[in-house]
Length: 252
Image 1 (cartoon, helix red, strand yellow):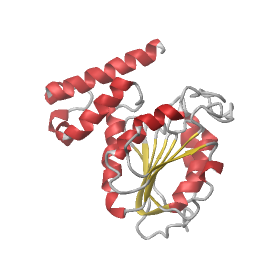
Image 2 (tube, rainbow, N blue to C red):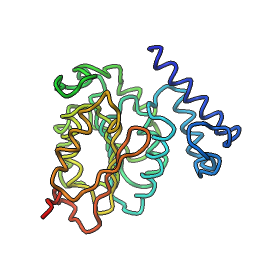
Image 3 (cartoon, helix red, strand yellow):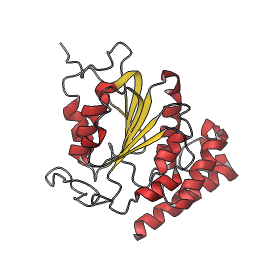
Image 4 (cartoon, helix red, strand yellow):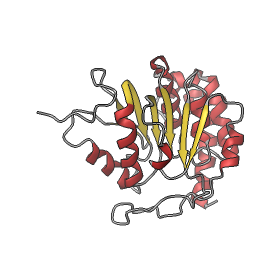
C-alpha cells in the first residue's frame, strides 16, 4: 500500500471516530453534528467495518451519498447495479439498503487482467491492467449471505448479455476511465426507470478526466441534468416523464 493510500485510510478512520465520539468535532462537514448522518448507526457501523477490512475506497461523504440515494430509490422496485466493483466495499454498502431488489455487479475482478484498454490521450492516470488485485472469491466472501446479488464477471458491456430487458432503479458507476464510463451510460441510462438514479464516482476528480468527458459527450444536446456532488461524484435522476428506454432527449 502506498504512503498516500495509508494516510487516506488513517484519515477516514479518524473522521469516523470523531463523528461517533462528538459530531460537533468533525471537520469534514461544517455543522456535521446537525446532519442526520450522525444518527445513522447502521450506516456508520457498516462503513466502519468496511474501512477496517480495507475494501472501501469511497470517502465518508461519498459512501453516505450512495447509501442515502440508493435507499431513496427503493420504492421504485427495479433492480440495482454497480459497474466497477473492485474489492466489493461499495457493493456491500448497497446491500444494506437494497431491500428486495436484485443487485447486479459488473467487473473483471482481476481474473481477466484488471482494467481494459484505456485512452492515453484522455485517461491521464490509469492504464490497462490497473486494479488487477481484485479477487472474485474475496468479493463473494464479503457479500456472503446477501440475498439476490448476481455477479457478472468479464469485460463490459459483453458481461451484461442477457440483461437487455432488465430495468434499474439505481446504478453506481466506478470505472475511472472514458470508454468504460461511456459504455456504462449507454447501457444503463436507457434502462433506468423514471425517477431512477445513476451515480458515478470520479466525475469531479482531476486525475480521471475521462469520466466527465464521457458524461459530457453522452448527454450533449439533451435536457438531462448532471449534478455534481461532494467529494468527486455526480448524480443523474431520470426525468419522471421519460420512457424507460428513451435515449437522452435533444433540446429543441
